[in-house]
Length: 200
Image 1 (cartoon, one colour):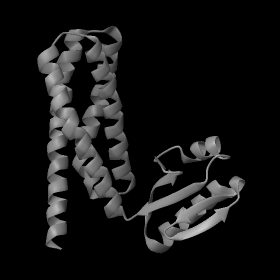
Image 2 (cartoon, rainbow, N blue to C red):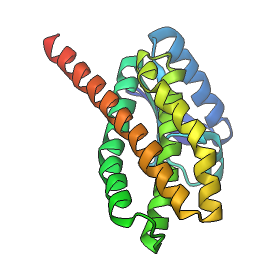
Image 3 (cartoon, helix red, strand yellow):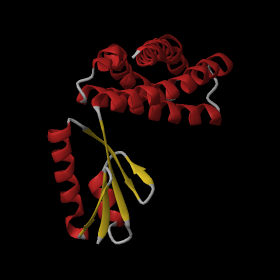
Image 4 (spheres, rainbow, N blue to C red):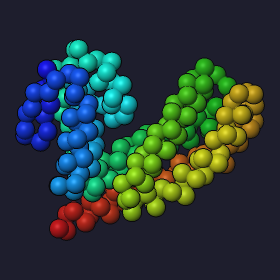
């Protein structure tokens, strides 16, 4: 048996039926309480994707699964705040990498490039999550998402061929400006939302 916690309700569920039970509870809460699924907390670990595989992999070890639901507004705010935190770290790092290392493809450069490609994937996931929520905030990031989608194949080709000039040109003239524009838009939305919540 696995303990499943939904809001303040605690239910014992058979291991083999736990994922189906979670999906049913999630659908019930979505319909009845106008909430959306956020993530699962499984034995203290936050799991945001690939839930079924995670549960199946650790099925016999899992003691507690907590179903985290949120309003669309709460989830939108969480996504925007996570995106803001990422961009506030990434933009200065990118700018520094371009200005200090132009043309140099050192070991730290490659580490930063792996981080950048992971970051671009995270931005795509953030924007897709906002889109799935049918959030007005998605329209804030939609243009930059399209730009990143368009530039990513060129960047990957340049990385594969180790074309330092093209890589740094793409970083300087395409990616850094996209990240800066996205950072400004997200910061403006987060600031505006904070202002709205203070007024209410």
